[in-house]
Amino acid sequence: MGGMTDDVEHDEQRTDETHAENGERPLRVLVVSESSLEQTNGVSNSVKHMLRRFRQRDFDAHVISPQPPAESGAFEGYPIDTVTSWPVQNFNVAIPMKTTVIAMIEAGPRPDVIHIAAPISRLGHAALIAGDEMGVPTVAVYQTDVAQYARRFARQTIDGIAGTVAPKHTGWLRKVSKSAGDAAEQILADRMAKLHNKATITLAPTEQARQRLESFGVDPALIRQLGRGVDSQLFNPDRRESERVRQLHDRWSRHGKMPVVGYVGRLAPEKQVDRLSCLMGLGIQLVIVGDGPCGENLRKLMPYAVFTGMLHGDELADAYAALDVFVHTGNQETFGQTIQEAMASRLPVIAPASGGPLDLVDSGRTGLLFSPQNDKALRACVQRVITEDGFRRTIAANGFEAIQGRTWPNVVDRLIDYYRLAMEIRLAHDGAAE
Image (cartoon, rainbow, N blue to C red; front, side, top):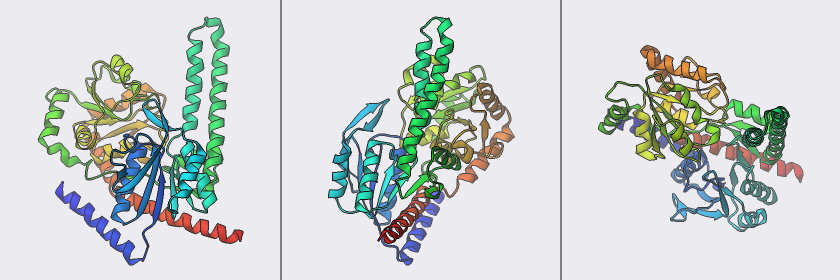
């Protein structure tokens, strides 16, 4: 692992020297996060990596996020202010008064740019308003397809009612379910378009996400594409040689008798982890890493699986390294960070041909994609990967190669370039208005 770490640190140092030579001054960034940094998810992890890179480049930063607050009140030395939140499916959703947030932003040091993770939230919307009132450029990040979630929630609610009534009534209730789902999705899509169109720039993690935003009505001229980084120092194939990982794989594989197939992520409805039950009978050991509101039901559904609970840091990286195959199930992902982490661990990846995975996986070369709604296709993909040794090794190696260069420092440096572009756009806009 030492050689890989040394190469990454050398590249980061060289990049920092290049920015210094170009005379680019450090920026002051206000980061408005929809997730508390005390929670573990894609948003909070991204913000933490951003702040680490800001510190390396001597940026000034300030964070506003939902409660709970950081124990120290800061991260990487950057202060964190928190606002009132409410737990929804183990996720703290900010519910502040917008006027309070706007006043908080306008009373603080004037930032060069406001970074907004998910403007669909009350917190993000308030930051957009404050940025507009202060004449500060805003960079909004499209994190979650809440329109799709709204569609599914509306349909599941009415389908649940349909399941409790006499069969003769279910037909029209199913029609109501579809109409309610379509209406809920459209309402959220319109709302997202309105908010993202207020931002100076919107960042979409994949080409599929960009197209989705355009279908909502977001101005294509405002959208830029920026993926997420992967911590190659933490997630890498060298871990397989450690004694802990060898022991873990030996235990999970029952001394090498069974391939270890694993999922990593939140155990929430949108992740569709229950689909893994279709793999029963393949002669594998299923390992599920993570926790969430569906955890208890999933344990009852798949009692033969190993459930590790939530893991972090080295324990999480070791769990990846102890797998033989990685499977992602959710077909509503705007990105798919765990896919990148699996690739960085040189695992063969299987994922649905929908959303973010379409950009991350070249099916047949860097992994396998299955028809999003077809559990038989998912099962067939897993069966192929565990039985065809040469194919499994090839897609794992190709996936590992494809992920090289997608380090967090590189991604955050590109993000900073977009900050500067947003500043130029705002300056030009204000100049034209005079």
